[in-house]
Image 1 (cartoon, helix red, strand yellow):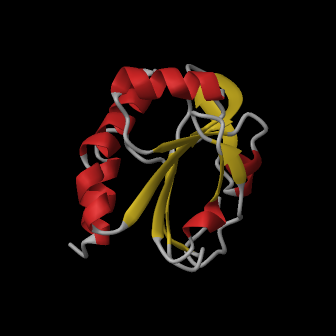
Image 2: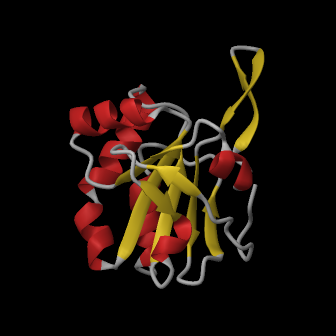
Length: 153
């Protein structure tokens, strides 16, 4: 997993409308990139809704929020519409950004081992460098935790 001080790998992924979005499009702005396992699951929905509810605060700080999972563009469209999400979700079925950021890892659930996305969030500075990492982010507190960090609290 990337650490603070690492250069964030650029990626080019489709959003819910099929428009290609590159991380480098946001140079000059801070960006919060969060990786989550799956659209429309309880934890992922709570996390997305927390970012949605905090969007005005992120906007006031000039910070973009981007969520990434391996779900399809169609899945992101449905997830966005159902939950009235107001920030960018990117589809990464080929695991380009997911592996680039090092969040595709072995996971254990109910004694079963499998590979999957570890819920993680990265604050990327204006120059494309990782400023802060939240490994194993908690869906209910992640959005607020990052806002507190960005405000210097």
